[in-house]
Image (tube, rainbow, N blue to C red; front, side, top):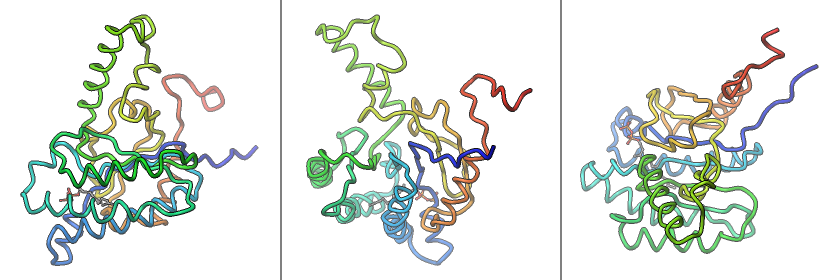
Length: 239
Ligand code: FPP
């Protein structure tokens, strides 16, 4: 019997290669970020149209603050200008933001708070934008919240297991099924470490601004040829 084509519930993308994309065209790095932002609008729509429920994207890591001030300023301005364009009237897309709030500019915080508020009751798809995000920081912040809840009697220590711990992570994001990092780099770079445990990983060579519909279809094909065992044995394939 032909197996059904599988659509991952949660896809995550490390948006890499914007700088190299720009350099190859003789442009400054920021132009790569602009192109990346434009591509995110298009490709997220396509990914949701395929039936993916949650898309997480790594737009700015805690470590990205080490870049030149001009580049960081450009990215922050881009977030303020372009994030609101992701909100469409009469849409079912809920947008959430994951990461630490400290070090983010006031106008960036206002932008993300407004969008979170505007889309909070939507129940269709979820776009999880990670800015000032670190996977280890997420786990540490969750641990602190758990400690505080135990002290306040909200939860008992015996109730902490893999599932309940996961609920304390930023926006309680579930396991990632398919993790994509564009640009050919083969690293997780402190992305959603807890949720990556059983993710299928895919590292296309293409830079993020060129990661189009065909590239996502290829990623889905690769995902469909993987044998996901979660530490067990797939009986039908091992007999
Ligand atoms: C990594 O490429 C990319 C980033 C640090 C920024 C990603 C941000 C976006 C795509 C824009 C966010 C979206 C919106 C809607 C505003 P890199 O600069 O490290 O590339 P390189 O490795 O080629 O230098």
